[in-house]
Length: 266
Image (cartoon, helix red, strand yellow):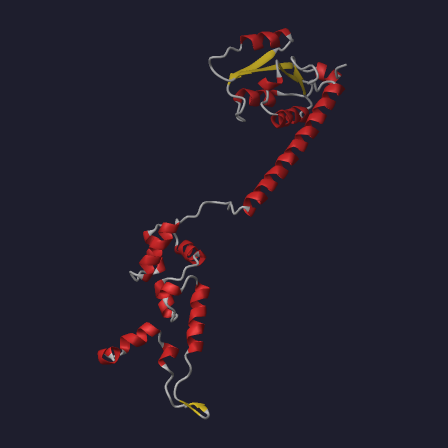
């Protein structure tokens, strides 16, 4: 038995086909036969949310009106879309009815119950999708897959920036301008790199070819300092008035460069 409020309103029909080549004649005829006094029709794919005629139907609704369609797939292309539209119709006190699916009639208690069950199923499916997505992301992260936006600079660009700074003597700001990025972006990209540049390795007194990482470079410096004992020791330790040994202030390449040629030859 239908609600009196629904029977007192207008029957508004909605017809839709996906392409211009399809015809709306059959849907119009069925809706007229069902008693629809006004029909809103359009040729547009159901996957689009911005359907002008559907929006007009929903805007014209008054309490007691009933939106009628020949089949539910003319109104919505997914359960979630159908439930969203049904909620908008119900919010103004109107009803929804499908000619091909008699159970989809919100003007009856049975029809409202069916749509309530559909809403629960849709929510259950949504929770399953969220769980599967979360599990998939965790599994991908465990395999080393990285999510998020792609890096602004490629490894080749970062290496080019290192060459501009270390070999050509450019500042980070100048290198960033040449690469068309902000200098903070370049700073972060350089900080993420694990390799120590040759200039940095020489500055720290380690051999650049042996410095695989910053930690290795620092360890090489410490080992070099431990292996070389202090010079000019007397009974009380090194003399206080002696200058610091060169290895305390210079790297090995700098020491060798300062030696005369005859000493190097000997």
